Amino acid sequence: PAPVASIPSIAFAWGAELPAALGAAFADLARAALLWGGSAILTGGLPASPSFPWLDSSPTLACGQSPPHPGAHVMATPTRDPLEVITSLAATGVDLILLAAQSPLPGNPLVPTLQVGHGPSAHEGDFDLLWAGADDKALAERLATLVADTLAGRHEPVCRRQRNLAFQIPRGDFGISL
Image (cartoon, rainbow, N blue to C red):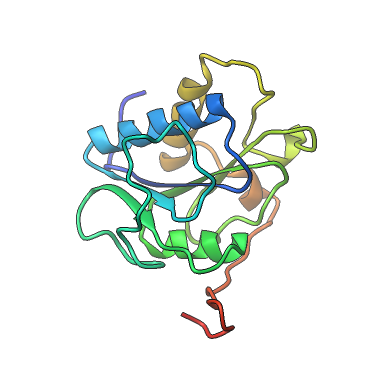
């Protein structure tokens, strides 16, 4: 799909190891955001994905820091708590957060949060897109359409429809809010 009216900045996160086909679709979407002049922000400390060999895994942003310029960035994450990571990604100023998860997570109340379910415990009604694990050539196109529709207001994330939203300031390693 064609880029939406404004140039998107998209955050990407996953919990467990990112399956290769899903990682390739995420990487395609990240490259598209970069080609459009936007940003792709990943969280530091993610399990490695061979789909992002072009991205240095060293953090270029502090936790919740807005990028100083468009491009590919890795945000430092002092905690592994998914809700704190999602809140920190939202604080960077992204237009959308894209998660890959095996079970649904609360979305951010301020930034549209799309979730791609994968694995045996993922159920269709809990996710914006359910990936069955097949080598899906159309997966990147389906993700791009879902992102464009969300940014254009044509798709409301499932977590928002279900009111599964939360916000938690990262507490850091010592329980002190950052």
